[in-house]
Length: 509
Figure 1 (spheres, rainbow, N blue to C red):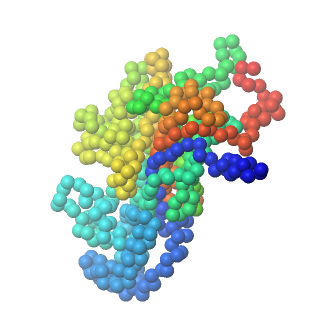
Figure 2: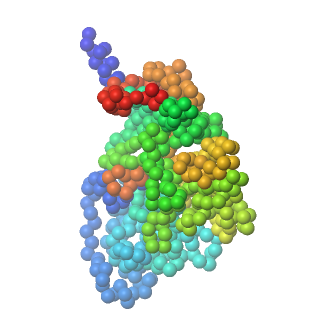
């Protein structure tokens, strides 16, 4: 008679609260990924006694580029064995190499031996074809010569947002989200969490997201009678309504904005960290041996200056009483997102906030020509153009935050548009998001148990290694939740416990 109970316990340990469909794309760092290093132990290394093995060999200085290429690759019989072993490894684990590092500076310094000993074997034949900007422009007269050791005819294509493809050598591994476990939980804090498990060649892959269904940040301020009252943060309306405004499919949108920061436009090394109550949601993942952080919402444009240091440009504009842009983005000198698709004479300054927002949307979602007539790749297309990930298979999309709804006409007329201590005038880029077919009010009333109607939606996650392996990975797909489980491991809100211990009143008490 105990058998039914045992079966019910087993079912409870293997929840299937949702159905999931979609894709994942994993960029394993070729030299440092824990997953790659583990599985490669099963492959015997190819031992080579190269004729040219000393990076400081004087012969390297005396060779012309053609001889150098042949002596280091073509004439070395062992190099062919390296390529054959690497080709087999890639085929066994469904790996696509991507290696667009620049080799003309330290530690390679265009040294043939060093390049040969670090590049993915076999990729040298594709390096200039894939990585060089000259191979992708319309000028047939500047095509690279096909020699990886000549650096004067190759400018490596670099992403403005997805910069990782030029930082390391990677293996791209992709597949379907064929999950064997899906758990939807309403946590003790009232958050909705979906966790998904998928089996891969590298072991268990799990990922998920968590959102606050009743997300609406407030602040405690002094009322007209001198007593403390709670009001919507910065006198804004509901953030979820603002984010969902204009969604092409009429969905309810949550930006997974945990960990976001702004930078003081007047002192860019002064970072403004978000309070935890401003976080609508977060993403999490573990892929085989590698844990991840979520790539957070950006309110800052990071670029590399002439000295090789990261330069910060807040994605904010200040406006005067007439709504005209008078300060902010466009004045720092290191901005990497220019106005696109505009009249050549009118591309130098933003007219108003809407013009600024449109420019950021063009850069991230549309692409187009800048004032010099140069075609600029949209950020949404960088993974395809620079990372070898087909947009048809994985249509990466960064959602841009339009904060024009936040500022009232009265605030604009009062000149509040130059106050950056809020969200007016800001644009953010959001690579992590979840959309729902339920309204905000329906989500706020979510309860545990079988749902009267399915909760459907879609999501995208952008993750990177928390173990400093350099790996980067992405998830994108659709879900349908039919059951929400109770969080049996939850506990009371710590804030409530501490407030009671310290006898601290609620706002308005």
